[in-house]
Image (cartoon, rainbow, N blue to C red; front, side):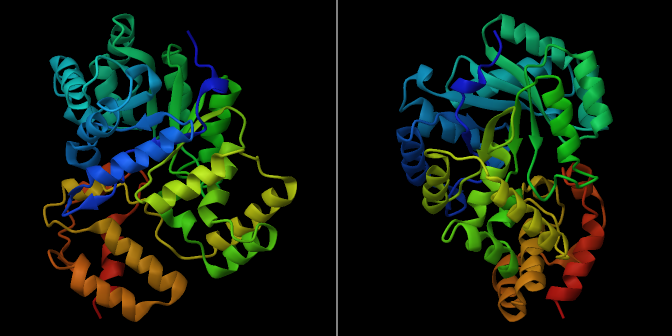
Length: 373
């Protein structure tokens, strides 16, 4: 049975950037946010094996599964290709995920982060697409798809080779629409031309589109005074035909409140608003910022323990807002306590897992020159 787009919530709750307390997930706040989200009539939750160091699926169990009837929500998670070393690992990981989340089945199950190279090769080597279909036949998966960070050519090949795929999750936002590396527009067109539902990740590009330069915010305020920059980014992607669900990795109650306001009585962008987004896009493209989405995939394997996304965020703050003194002070007192940008040894582990394909080693050198002078 295919996916009925009309029955899917437009806003999905991404469990990737949950609020924390003492470096652990703040479960009390998560429960409160889940309650607000469900009370608004929304019910799609997205997690993964690696989110929050493996604790996100456990948080889903405590905040959602134990507190709501199983049929009242959709739960999505992902198979980590980098943890598969033999065919038996597929079932081992899946069973561990079921135990973590406290469920007998997942509504949506994805092969995580397919792109050219290791992940794609692993999923093909261990026949993970056929395995996913078997899990679906067993009733352990309701809908099967994948998240994607590769090229348009690879996406075409995957869809030709695996017509059984029911949906695809891609990075999509107005800044990356014409980005030749991310290729949001091309990926979106490939999927919609084939009638494959799209799940959107990074609609606010790791928060960078929620905090736009003053000149860009002025463009938005001229049309919708008081509307947040994040609401514009979310409405942009949610207005596109074929988009099933837009994931937002909400970290605070304020973000939840703003997003719920955006999707209550949702209104697609008007022609005037679409023109405003194009003007803002030009302003954003003129900013020399680092396009990091703070997914933190680079952090787990860094041998020096460098907080790479936090460092890049401070660099962007200096470049966009001229907040040099504050950024450097925060860097010294908070971010660089364990390791500085200049401590990078150039091993390249981070670049190998970066979904944005950033030249992190060189960017850390630049960051060291800006933050450590």
